[in-house]
Amino acid sequence: MKEKLAQIDKGSFYRNLTRLAFPIALQSLMLAAVAAGDALMLGKVAQNEMTAVSLATQIQFVQNMFLAAITAAGAILGAQYWGKGDRRTLEDIFNLMLQLCGAVSLLFFLACELAPELLMRVFTHDAPLIAIGSAYLRIAGWSYLLTGVSQCYLTMMKVSDHVKPGALISSCAVVLNIILNAVFIFGLLGAPRMQARGAALATTVSRVAELALCVAVSAKASYIRPAFDRFVKLSKQLRADFTKQCLPLMGGSLCWGVGFTSYTAIMGHMGTDAAAANSIAAVIRDLICCLCNGIGSAAGIMVGNELGAGRLELGKAYGIKLKNISYVLGLVSMGLVLAVTPLVVRMVVLTEEAQSYLGGMMVIMSVYMIGRCVNTVTINGVLDGGGDTIFDMYSLIVCMWMIAIPLALIGAFVLHWSPLAVYACTCLDEVGKIPWVMLRLRKYKWVQDLTR
Image (cartoon, rainbow, N blue to C red; front, side, top):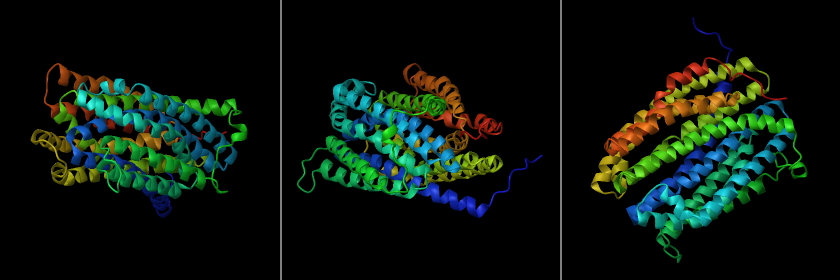
């Protein structure tokens, strides 16, 4: 028997989804474009330069896992309190995010400045790659110091009906990054030819500009800003509520982030050709995932707004509708990966063997995209929007850490499978957990008002 759900005003639903999803997707696209620009420009310089920077940026990827968990907890509570109309609590949530993200950013900055060679050895044993990557990290580490603060500002804009200005700020920073990439990597306009170090300098300058824009725009009256007069005087109840959301998100984010970094490390130890192909495949994956990232973020905000306002049945109906949309999005993304594969394989300067690996990885990735889209929208959007944050960690522990990673390790280092077979193992987790995700959605533990 078909379940009866609250009636959705489809016009309002799709207008709201479009209003939220497309600026966030553009923001995600622009961020992914930086990695694509780095890969393409450095790929024109040398394969080693491109591969080393791809491996080095895994450090920022891990940092972003911490930042993503903190800002996601802020977004979950923020969306519900915005739906309730409680501006003061939103300012306190902003304070909490700044405290935690600032501490994380400082730790990663110090690691990149004091021990970059040690960080690079996690991903490769190749001495030239370690040298190039270490030089990159010493400069890029300064950008990691600023990232956490700007992400707090952008998150608060996203949940308080200022998603377009936030996306515009990120986009401007990315455009600046890409332009400066070309200038510093190739030595244009009289600048020194810095290659990998030029990519790091471009990233740092653009992060400075991004943070400056965030602070300037947020000075307007309608924006939520940190309440510095009570920066450390926050209610214990709010800290407890924030921690309740943040810890499972942190666990899930680290499981996913460290797991993905493990995939990169495994492929990095299978030779420079496999590592180079995997680097390009990762860039294409991130570019095509932008729309599902946008819809996933929009799903969390839309569901959270309705639940925070006390409209639980409508929030539930929104969640089911968004889950259905995620399947369509997955099939479209699958087709898009297959469509761009011939162009991508010919576009970057790779060895013949690396090109062969890249073509196979793209076909495998096309199937992976279905699971990635469904899980991003359903888990990171719908379930998280209602505070059901612990499921993501459980599913990652089982599907990634108990199945995909052990298989990839055994295949790479014990059974000596081909790089394509090992890459397929790294894609198992997203597809394999779809039935489990659907069962969790139907339990409706996420249909709850988290405000006080």
